[in-house]
Amino acid sequence: MMSKKVSLVLSGGGARGLAHIGVIEELLNRGFEIHSIAGTSMGALVGGVYALGKMDEYKNWMLGLDKRKVFSLVDFTWSSQGLIKGDKVLQKMREFIPDQNIENLSIGYAAISANLLTREEVVFTTGSIFEAIRASIAIPTVLTPVKTPDGLLVDGGVVNNLPINRAKRVEGDLLIAVNVNAHIPVNRLIISKKQKEENESKYQIKVREFYQQLSRILPSTKEEYKEEKLGYFNLMSKTINLMTDHITRLNLLQHQPDILVNISRDICGTYDFYMAEELISTGKDAFAKSFEAWNKTANSTQNSL
Image (cartoon, rainbow, N blue to C red; front, side):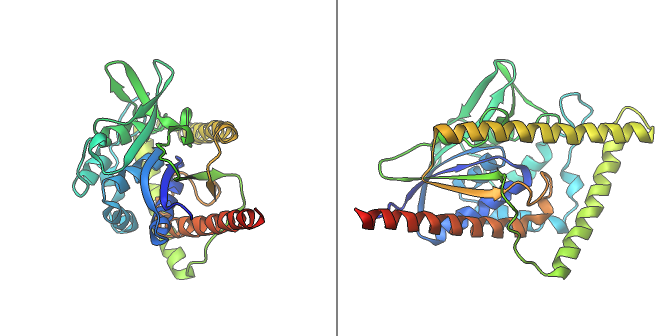
């Protein structure tokens, strides 16, 4: 008899992490019980929201971002450590998602961060879940690090982007890992042309506003210098992605999940949150296909015994 208890591991990956919502929804639709979640960056955020029992509120908020003034939530800061504080976004989330101590949650939870000063991985399993999430999503050069008495915490993806080894297990459970940075072809779902054009139009406006805001805090008004700095920003993003991918590959060689759900890293950019609807649907579809493939193999193996 197949176990219905699941230990879930969710990778970081920026906007691609919204696919985790779809994976969780599909798991629940199939009658599975998630007893623990370990996540990094967006995986820690989405997993934390689920652990708090506020997934519907968070999903609806993300789907409604096209109707909001996103930049009212972006707190730019003049800092060599990052462009955005990130406090406004979390403060907005606090309005409909209450903070709790991790040890008081109804399921096991772990969020991964990295301490730049001690060069160590930090695993949050107690204390404020909001503080854990904030540390885990502190993408270097983008979100400012979190200062603590003994360290400077940044995005856990730089040390463990798919924290399979941090999963809390119980006997007979299924270990399911979701990697939203997989080097596989994009399996893009069909959406209406009208909806796609509306989403892209609104997104392009936001991108222009972002660059306008960004140019105001750059130390030069020369156009060529702005382009150079933006190029550097993109270079850093690609460098971090390469590093996290390499670490994930090594981690998978040492720790094999029962089911690995792969979602293409090319489905969208790191900050393409306007694609929430498509990404959530992609997560559902990816899990369904991975589960059916695993189930078919498991049944074949059982029948051959």
